[in-house]
Image (cartoon, rainbow, N blue to C red):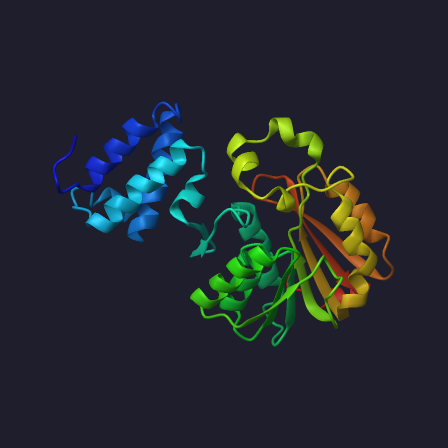
Length: 295
């Protein structure tokens, strides 16, 4: 179908033709192809638009062809590409870990703004997955002492690779929540599994087929892990330590009530850019501890 030398426009047209039977929405299909090409070329979208006549090297062309085949089989484009954008970096992702979402970037941004005036903090990313949260915090703040933990040894392998890629020194601990976590931390952050099994019928088929279920679903209407964390949270926070959580948009009220039941804490529920309940902060020490916060 093509000449021996393929331009970006040519492979994009080929990809569009290949994916049309599988992704019928024109906008979504174009978005996935552009995401794939910018990722392969390490370009932004303006660079892609301005270089459509650039001839692809054979290696990149072959990677593109293989990725399109993977997408045809239902794989999310990030898995097909092998990495996903998060906070200005490309994190390795595969079937061992969840694909980091844009909402989680807002959680990281909140932490960085909150802790802007505090240095040398011990940080625990509980249920780290790809390491997107903890590694980003360590990359943005090299003075932080970051520990990544996860119940999955396979996920920790991916997280460690990402930490090495970005030159972030981290400790890793395989642990079921706090079971093997020693000591206390100034900041604990967690984006645990929070989807109820009842939501399966409404979920995207590619998520169910390719992303690890252990990192998606939780019992008790998705609240089970938050309840387990709440039971031990204060033991693992330093004086005036702070915990941050991502949550499902329908879970805000329940989790606010759960964490407010802890003694001497101040709890803040925060919405994402779409106006949905998405993040929650628990400050140990109540109002006295909250004086350290930026926002």
